[in-house]
Image (tube, rainbow, N blue to C red; front, side, top):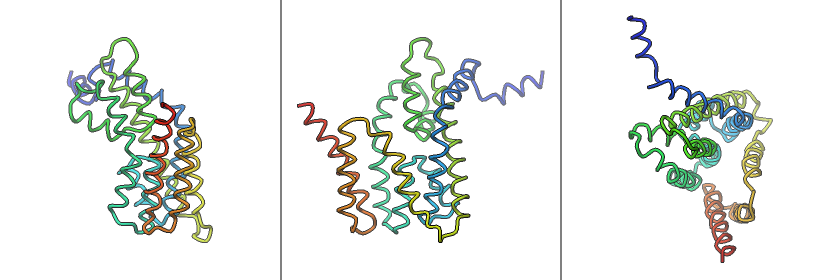
Length: 243
């Protein structure tokens, strides 16, 4: 009897249904890890190439948990940009999470603030897509937040492990090898799969052109200016097309 009671206290799941949802979320994430692992590894190497130590690279990854925001932040810090500039760049790149939160909020309004805080920290593009899909499916809606948690935690652990491995490996490469090109390759790997519409292409072309024109700005402000101009170009294209 004491062993049964102890086991019940150690079980983090409130019911077998919650456990099944959690494990289903973990399994649903497995195909995505094929791309997450190499991207995380490259992100870790890129942070070291930008002048960060492995410990700083891992700390940045834990605090941002966003591949593109992590890479841009590393570049701005390497250029000794002021903190407001770094924060502004990270904010611009993370604005899409506001839309993600708005889409998920009707499904998680009944959860405690602690649950919603954890879910917001673990939110990624992939986690959001799987979460919306599961929350929108017909049937019993109980414990579906555990499906989201299983998927998000699997992505989180895999990403952080890959970044750590990349940061450690990057630190072993002699400085004479110059790993700066890794940063460019990592951005290309992010950009290419996202160009699905003409609005995406317009945003990418404008952002790229502005980044080149504004390359001489101090503190790598060209990244922030190019991001804002790219977003504006995409929005304007969509509005013109709608009219």
